[in-house]
Amino acid sequence: MSQRLATYPYCAAIKSETDLELAMSSRAAILVILRGDGLSLADPIRRAHASGKLVAVHLDLVDGVGDDLVGAHRLLVAGADAIVSSHSQVIRGVKAAGGVAIQRLLLVDARSLDSGLIAIGKAMPDFVEVLPGAILPDLRQILAGRLAMPILAGGFISSRVDAAAVLDAGAVGVTTSSRVLWG
Amino acid sequence: MGVDAPLSRRLLALSGIDGLGPTPEEGILFHHMSLEQLMHRGRFLESRACVDLDSIEGLRADFTAASFLSANLPIEAFITRRPSVASQISESGRIGFLRVSALDSTGLERALAGHSGTANLGTAISPGLVLAHLAPSIVESMPKPVLAYGLIRTPTEVQAAFDAGAAIVVRSPYMDTSTTPLR
Image (cartoon, rainbow over all chains, first blue to last red; front, side, top):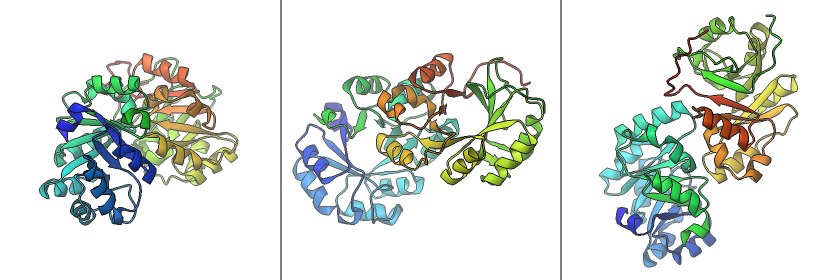
């Protein structure tokens, strides 16, 4: 995933079949599935792979599949390259199963930031997705030295100016539902 | 109580462990403390304060709790994630804020859809830091008044939140270097 992001740092946030079709013909090398039937993703994932894309699935947001380790394993068996989750146990299990684990850091307030960083320190995901990503430049100094993993930023990033600020603040990639950024 | 001053536009968030006090132009938002601590600190209030009802240990986050606090302390305004409680508070003549998480556009849209639009019921956006990054049309659509709550630390960030449309801004002493003693 890191190599793909180094080439083009935008990940397409997929919320519909239309998004999926558009993303597969875009420059975005990584698709992050945020909606849909989590029990029926084998075919969409296969089609995305055939288009040269990597696929991450957000375990907490898709329907049908449980947001637990068993659910995560099912998605990996269906072909998902990465699993996005807020749960440390799932993160550890995905890594153990050979998948790429992306843990969410929700920046709601100081307390959630602190507790999130502690959880991430224990789970050691492959990537951390920071939300809302738009405020990453404002928190750059606070997060510096406290996050060892590469950062994906998502949330309220809708222009290349927004994205540039976030990438300059240290993110290696941007997750966005703004199709214009998919390229 | 003898407190006739209105709710301040600038609030300092105080938790059970903070040893800092507000600047002269700031009021107080109490959060993340026990009911005992709140009752103790609230006795020394010189202006009307706000409470994050969901974060007070020993207190059920319901209308009975809000009524109790109003009757015993100069608490004018309440923040809660519970739509029904928020509506009851505002319908009783107090100032209520429904707290919504602004982590991404889809989540914010869904959260605002749950706002009843009751008169006197405003919107507390968390993290408040993101307000300056939102499109003006999004802020305009929020039920007023808007309170920016979470991760705002510096005077520049406070002003940015006001400029973005917040009527009240909560400053967090998180990593604050202020040495203002607790009053």
